[in-house]
Image (tube, rainbow, N blue to C red; front, side):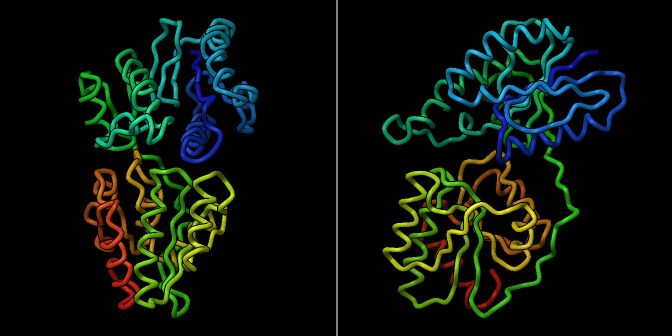
Length: 333
């Protein structure tokens, strides 16, 4: 059987992590099937049972992406005599009657909070346009894989599909380099937030909490994995931190191994309120690190029965400051 693994969207972050996981999985499988990976920029190698079809030009613009998905994908299905499709990018492949499985990991269309057009145009499009396409894809797919129970329940409600076609598969963590929490290295309490500069990652609530802590003369520092140069939001955050003399280090992108090491000697801050899973929560839990997280359905699912965590309302900087102050004074939550 010829199986098409479709993911031209993945080039970084969680999407690339998922794509890597399936490439590594199918590379080891010897089931008589041949897997065709249709991707954009990742550098995968051909193997005995995998053919990699790279199309980096797809990432040039949305127009390139749409043209590829409407015309080129259909051509590839015919050329390689594909018998089954597994799409990892939330949407099924159009213009084909072949059975398709679907991996849904975009949570924006399924969260309670609704973005207005003026508030964030891109997120509005994801919720009101792309969201409808995702629901359509869910209805058409034979099998849907999601990462968490809350996503399964949300997808069932939104699509009206039978729950039996949904399967919860949490991403497999490589635990080889997990470092166990050993506590702070110095007297200054260090907090850590690994996240990109997008609005729902909610860096702003951390800055607001920092201002309150600064007024109390608290001794602490925070590490962000943004440099402050990535986009307008990142620049605004860095300028505000500088203006108010906040003890925030804009370290920029770091390797996964560096992230894992930081879990072992910091308190994880996780104010993001739009996630399917929230990988840092899972990784920090494996490290047994203290966690201060926004009170969300995904955080409660990932951190269920985990003792070293506290929650705060995602827009409550006063409560976040109080949680951080407790950690600063006692070393615990």
